[in-house]
Amino acid sequence: MDHISRRQALGLFGALGMGAAVASCAGPGGTAPAAPNSVAAPATGEITGEVSFAHWRGEDKEVFDELIKRFTSANSGVSLTQNISTSNDYNAQGLQKLRGASIGDAFASFRGSQFSNFVEAGLYTNLTDSPAAAQYEPDLLAAGKSEDAQFGLPYQVVFPMPLINLDIFDRAGADIAPKDWDGFLGTCEALKSAGVVPISWPGGDVGNGGQLFNCMIINVAPADDMGTQIEQGTLKLTDDWYIGMLRQYQQLIPYLQPNSTGTAVEPAQSLFSRGDAAMLATGSYHLAAVRDLGAEFPMELIFPNTSTGGTSKYEGVYNATFILGVNADSDNQPAAMEWVNFLSDPENAGYYANETAQHVAVAGVEYTNEDLQKLSPWLEKKTALAPRFQFQNLDVRNAVEASATAVIAGTDPEQAAAEAQQIVDERV
Image (cartoon, rainbow, N blue to C red; front, side, top):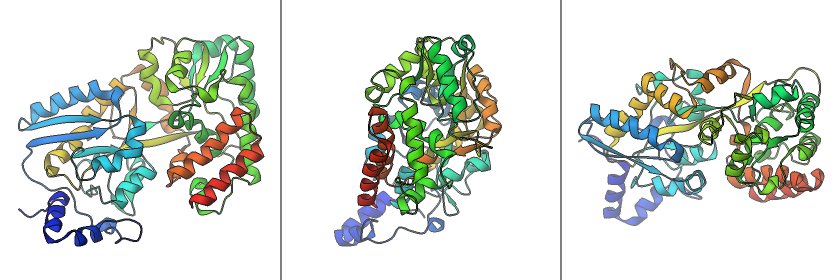
């Protein structure tokens, strides 16, 4: 056997003494992780044994169950189990759960800080030369790279922009493609005059409520890497441009549902799916959930463009996430890799996409789902990779996004910015 898994290696280190093992772990003051290009590809061998697939998409369980049925039919020596956490738990505890590979021989990760932390912890094998990586649109693979190594494969392409009810927009005569901030406010006013809540916003849910931040900041920040620069201290939340964006948040208050900062995502979805709100300010990843709640109206996306004149740099935002990886700690890397290969096949990726109503980064997929067909033109627009995932420190991201929530709750924008900047300064 020419491969020693991380699990086996840790066992060996244990036999030699815990000191050596501890010294091999990355962490503050510890030994630096291996350079990305020196990380090994998944081990090869027989496609057999038990495989755990760890992720947070509980709403996709039945679709994955069907794909697992097809996978194990073609690979009779494999059993495959899903280990599903809530997104909040997975975001907070994913590293602890996957380290050691008691679960998650194959796993998914969020783009941004979680992916970076997993790389830093040595959790990934190197998929750069894998057959699976060759199946993806090259431009959509960046979120799974570290330096030049492809550790993960961003499976989903989602648009974190508000979903809209086209029937309500038609009745209200509201513009579905406002070119600037005044245009967007005009859209909101037309919807309000028609007697509906213009925007259903789950401000009580950090993960979903924060998606609006992507749209609000992308065209007003002085640099595309504004999140990175905020963490580095070269951009401040007390800068005029950021306070100006918070004032735009303040202008949305009349168009949100009551108690929006205390609204969880489920009631926000319900308000929209009943036709009592014209927009759901989360993203395209909620198409299937809204349909499951009984919505039959046609849907589109809208970009709350915060530009205040002239030509906008971007027409929208997208995210490449649900990054598939093979666990470096796994004792069954051949079968885990085969599962990732299977998911990356265009036919299987197409089944996943059409059944879950989410676009995927796999090339050559045919979209038969009517909602996906409706939103597919957004794949060709000039969209920016969602900036909220630039933050590597989750505390910093939460503090920054909380400044917007505070403004919606009634805090003065300058005060909210100063308080958030103080937290950022303490964390970086």
